[in-house]
Length: 545
Image (cartoon, rainbow, N blue to C red; front, side, top):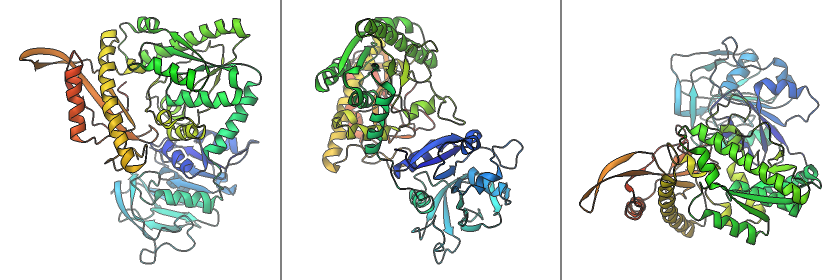
């Protein structure tokens, strides 16, 4: 089944992936397309999108070499919504005027429709049902001073004469503000208007449809061949494994690589759940000594990730060769790669910078003998969880917090040693026990497992999305039992989020923080200080490395 598709054309803006998420939240499939590839795809033989959204970007449209698209794109009859730079590009290309004013707008700004006293005109499908927008989120240095012929201004601010414009006859719309962020309260309603009232989308992007179509796709791709799964026990690899198991049954063999970088008792838990509960073919590979030896003395985070990624693939290839001798060959390697992994590794399309390499994206060697099977590669984390629920995976597994493939190695700053890993394991077990109790208390009161709005949203009384301890590789002086100590500090990280693309630090009650700190200092030998990380994403990442 071919879903209605919206192209999100990437001009290098910071919210590009968020726009795609907002479209998908409205049950419409969104795909990121670099601006350089748009015309080639439109001129090709593939299916055309139901609509196109231009993202923001850091350039000025009137500068030489600024990202652009030709005039004929607007003549194809495909509805277009330009956001920020995208709106300015539309105006500039179609004969309007974009300038750099003396007054810039950043952050929360009051906005009024062009007919503020009467509300938006009936002809404005984009503002349909939005009688009083109130305020929006702006982030621009340029603005549209004059709209192109055929366009009308539909809203403005005190300092921006064209907060939005439209040519409804041609299905062309532009907004200077960012409707995709939570700071624009009416933003999702506006996007829904564009998707349904302008583009005529049907809302066929559901996880029920995804599971049905993906099962058929996996069966067709694999045929009668065999698949090896890199099962970590985390949400992503678990959902990928159960989805593929539904498609091909016992032709899937799972290898659980215990690299010695797992949380306390995690290896045994993985074998219990997937070997007994799901009745999957699963083999445990004890490779702790191998991984720790490869990491010996390595301090640079990217090098750690690359080493771990290379070792993972090497182990899989070795095990696959052994399995091939028994069962006649393994052709596919199944991984739980999801969209944020791809984006942060610089593979999301367009101008994404490499933030950090993911072992299942950036660390794959060219010599790998198996073909990658990545059924979740296009999904955000919240969509992966929804697929897990659709597959009938238990809530305690579906809503399990994310855990990185490199494991505790990237929570141990500096060189990785068994001594440091032991400190992280013990402190992390305490943290998880206390926050699990906190989350369950919220669930008992609200009936919701996770309702984090992420960075920029209200963070009070919200379930914690991800939580862990880190070892910053610093020691400090303390006093315990009337004696001087010189021990390690432990960092605590707890965030609210939806998909991991953005996050905010969790406003845990003081008494919860106090209990966590006291227990870690009292129960973990070698720790005399506990720190709480108050950094959001951006500017920080969720993991420390």
